[in-house]
Figure 1 (tube, rainbow, N blue to C red):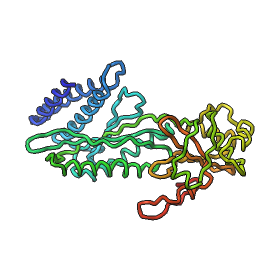
Figure 2: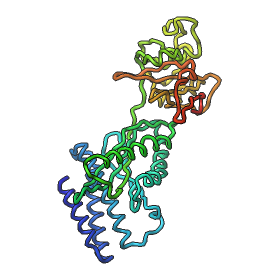
Figure 3: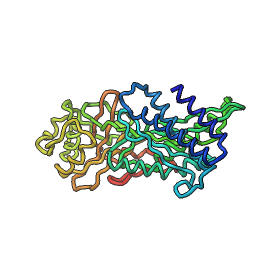
Figure 4: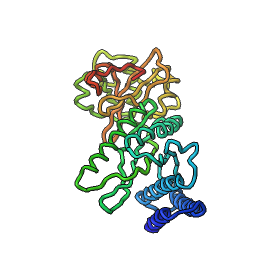
Length: 361
C-alpha cells in the first residue's frame, strides 16, 4: 500500500509537468498500467489483504481515474460521454457479498450539491439494474474530495451509513435523504470546525452495493411498546419457526378470543399450501407462497416509522399485511390487522399524516 501511495504521488507530480501530447500519451499509459495492477490486487480473493487495504486500493483506482480525466481535458478534445463532466467506472472487488463497487468520476463540477444532483441519474440507473436481480441489497456511498488547509493538501472521504433497499423502496427518496443530505451536512460540519480544512476539488462518489441476507423469521419476539399500544397487530406466539404461516392463518381465520395462541386457529398445514417452502420464511420465498396459496402478502418493517419492505405484484381477494420485527437474535412476523391505525401517528415532512393503502405506499 505504501508503494501505491508513492506511485500515485509520482503520477500526480508528472501530470503537472506534461507539456506535449506525446508526453501525455506516455503518462496515461503508465497510469493505466498502475491501475491495472491495482485492479488485480482488488479482485484476487487469495491475496490476504485486510478490508481496510482493499478499500484503500479501490480509493487509489478512483482517484487515478479522476486524475486521468482532469489531465485528459488538457490534451484531448472532450467529446460525447464527457460533456456533463461525470463518468461511471465499475471496479471489480473480492469483498464477500459485494455485488457492485462503482465510482461516479468528476471532471469539472465545483459545487458539491450540483455534483450530487447530477450524479443521481447515474447512481439510480445502476441501483435499478441491480434490483432487477435482487430482492434486497445493502448500499452505502463515499464522497471523496481533495481538501486544503494552508499549504497542506489531503484526500478525505465522507461515508454514508449502510441502508437496506428493497424492490418497493423509493430509490430517489433514498438518494436524497440518505446520500445527498448527510454528505452535505457532514461536509459543512467538517469545514466549519477549527481544523481549517476546506474542499478544494471534488474527486468522485463511490457506491458500494452488497447482498442483504434475506429476512429469516421464526422466533417469538416481544413487540415494542409503542406498537403494542396501538392495538393494530396480532402477535401469534409460536415456537415452531412458522410465525409467518401462523400470522397468515390469523388473517384468513380470525379468532374471537386469545388471538395470540396458536390453539385458537386451524393448524397452518391444513389451510395453507407450503409445498417447497422452507420455514422460517424468507422474503425471497413469499412470491412462491402467494402463487401456491392464492394469497397476496405485503411486508412492513419499523424504520423511523412503518415502511414497506415488500409489496405484492398483484393484490388478491385474500390479502394479508404483515409486520416484520427483529431483535439482536432473530426476526419475527406478526399480523397487521389495521394498517391505518398502525401508521396513524406518522407525520410526513410537510406536517401531514401519512395514509397507506395495501398496495401503494
